[in-house]
Image 1: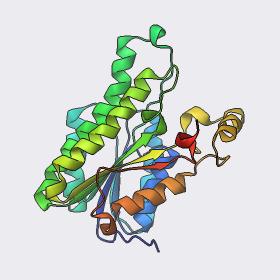
Image 2 (image 1 turned 180 degrees about the horizontal axis):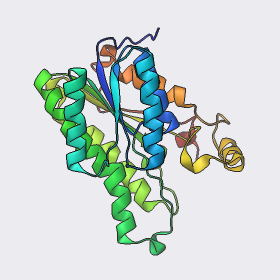
Image 3 (image 1 turned 135 degrees about the vertical axis):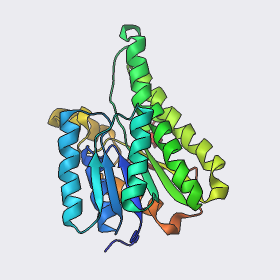
Image 4 (image 1 turned 120 degrees about the vertical axis):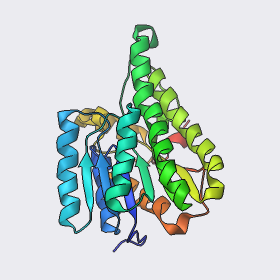
Length: 255
């Protein structure tokens, strides 16, 4: 049993198709939450992943569903939140985990590519936070957790669009935490470092190279991210808002 009970809570994970997203979903369900899942984009890979995860959650005895959306569509995001409230009886926890990776020299990048990365990784988070605010403000409580990359805090060559989007999510988190504090809604972020299962680090050579750079000499595990999410999701964290928990093995402290 989780140290952080979420029994009776309703959760929504936007971007549950990655190994991190799946770990979050299973952790929430194990803690007692009924959990809705969505894609970030309507790709066959994402759809298949959330369907498998959704079946696992239901087999655990939790209510939930998996829905295909495009996070850049205001209509899709609003419909997802409305379905969550209708089928799960409310919305207590929102977790945003979009992660459209993109690396390219800025002089070789197009404005369309820049706009696409920001639309998914930043505007999509804005849309889901805004949609979730409706039911959360009505019930005068809620937990919003945004997953961000360490590259929102530290720039990277060839990563201008991605880094800008991640930095935007950090300050969006801080701004919303101030806007909704009096209504009992906390808004926090988890800054994940390089983690097992990320699309950009599938090959062993890249994993070894990154592990040598990380002070802890290993990648983060999806379950470690999930444990941090459980903490921010619980009633015990009601006085924590506008904060970023860096889960990165010491990378940001390295010169």
